[in-house]
Amino acid sequence: MKKEWDTLEVLKHARHDWLNKLQLIKGNLSLNKVDRVKEIIEEIILDARQETMVTNLNLPQFASTLLTCNWEQHYFLLDYEVADFPRNHKLDDQLLSQWLNQLFEVLDKSIEKYHENHLSVTIQAKEEEAHFFFDFSGLITNPTSLFQFLEETFDSSLKINVIDKTEEELSFEVFTNPS
Image (cartoon, rainbow, N blue to C red):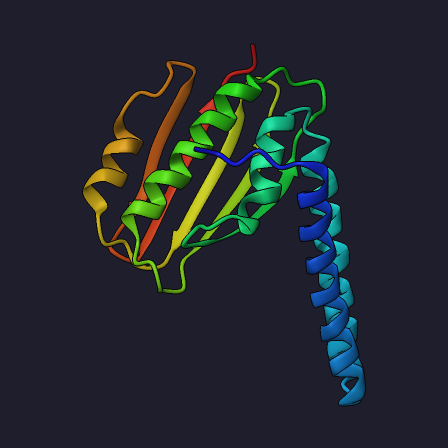
C-alpha cells in the first residue's frame, strides 16, 4: 500500500536530498573539480525543471507518486521526464496513480532486490491521448507476474503496448484518452 506523506516527512526527505547535492558540490570544489561542479549544478537545474513540470500536470496523486518514489523502499531507482503535456488535459488522476502504484508493487516483487535496477518514465500528451513510456533496465527474476500485470486490463481507458521484454530490459507504452 502507498505511504501517505505528511508535511514533515516530505520536508525531511527534501532537506536530505538537498544536503546530499550540496555535499557533492562542496566535495568537488575542495578537489578543485570546477567542471564537475558545473555539471552537478546543471543536473540540479534539470531535475528541478522536471519536478516543476510533473507538479504542473494537474495530476496531484500521480505526481506525488513519481516525486516520492525514490524516498520509499523500492528495489529500483526512478527517473522521469515530461516531454510535452498541455495543462488542459483531463486525465483520471486516481486511475493513473493507482495503476502506477500497482506497477511499482509488481515490479518490486519481480526484480532482483540487490541489483542496480532503473525505471525511466517519459510523459507526453497530444490532443487525442496521453502517452507514458516506461523503460526498465535491471534484472527481472519473476517475469511471469510482471508481464501478466502488463497484459491484464486494469481499466478500459488504459492501453498497454509492450515493446521489448527480456530478463534485463523491459519497455512498454501506456496510452490513455482524456475524459
